Image (cartoon, rainbow, N blue to C red; front, side):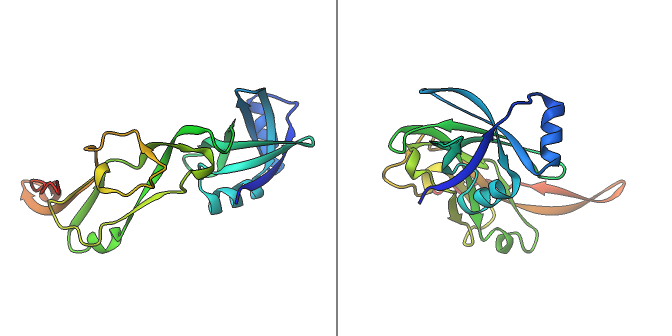
Length: 203
């Protein structure tokens, strides 16, 4: 099911105008695409936050602008690095059956379990690049690493994607690796250092 969001055309442009807009509970955004001119718009902050929370950061949505409806996906969200509040939104108009390139987050299940007892999960890839139809963008890709041990690695090729999804990243790219933390004593006292064990390639 495609989510929907109401928006209005923004008449005031610029950083000062955007700051004032956020103070009123709205987020500045733009929508663009092959069949339309770039439009500066504004969306309600709470409505957008709810949409992202339930649909993910790459959701396909119906955007209502002055009585017109556009199908678009979230191209980019700009976050405040300190408060983690949404600052700006880019939307790209697409057709639901159009194939697009998109980055989706990788979630490692069981990470907390693995990291007990001086084990470290080093996640090299937080997102993977895929190609799929706009109507089939996955919210995230999950992989259970509960059974992983020091020296194990996870590659892109190890993860399961739907048949309708093409993987654009190198299949041998490392997503995550498992290392131990060993405390050694130097002249200044105890200093925690990471000691990586030679990886046991699963392929």
